[in-house]
Image 1: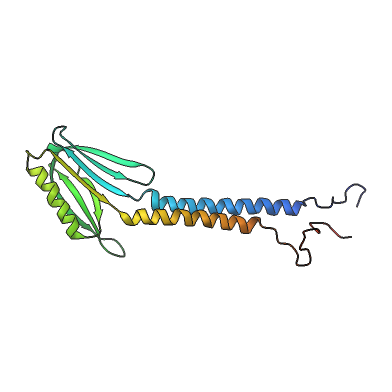
Image 2: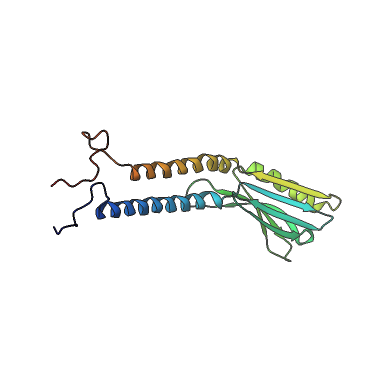
Length: 191
């Protein structure tokens, strides 16, 4: 070795700096993947569906409240014909039970909500159809909360945050030699 090129005791080596950078990239990679999964599972899953029809305004507002935003759409009451329960087949698991409000040809059909029970869907369908057939009924307000998504969100978000902290703690912890309980040896090169 040439004079002045000896490693400074306690200074990080190039290998140590590369490993630190690698650890940071691994933690960031895990965080991005986990955040994308949580976003796909939770942020696009509706927490609440709403249908608010006001005869005085002549419109029905269809809304879906998501975890961080809401989706809304409006249809003229006179363009709506009836509500109906539709059952969609999925690849696995139980069938998807939905309420759709059909148009009289003047516009598109409108999706209202997903249901886990056909009897609940049919009860809300009767409410919607009763309003559409009775011009003297001034207002219809139907809401459907999806409590399972609420619970999943409040459980999964802290779990994911804890997982990220645990991964970061494991990757950034320094292991000391058993004989070096006070941390005095460090990264010195013995010669």
